[in-house]
Length: 107
Image 1 (cartoon, rainbow, N blue to C red):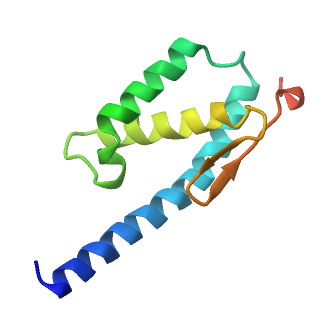
Image 2: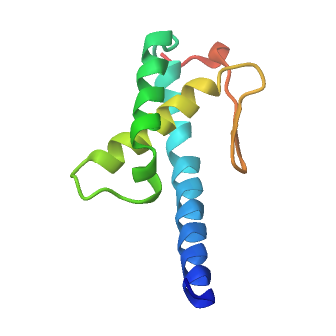
């Protein structure tokens, strides 16, 4: 691989990562709002989300040609981060930090 190809690949990955952080900064707070309207996620639900992220996480940065697959993986990540935001101290993902309290529950 040439230096130019390496540089181009790095720029594409950096752009995809920045886009992911931007999208998550909008999506996770929406999942937090949804979470405040219902009981905390069960361990089973968090396990389902983790399974999706583990199996399909690559399609979050490198979109799938299969319709809906990228959205499903992205939403699993955003929902998981939204639920983890309720843990004491919140959750970090790259440069992002999400933190929420259940006491501010919406009805």
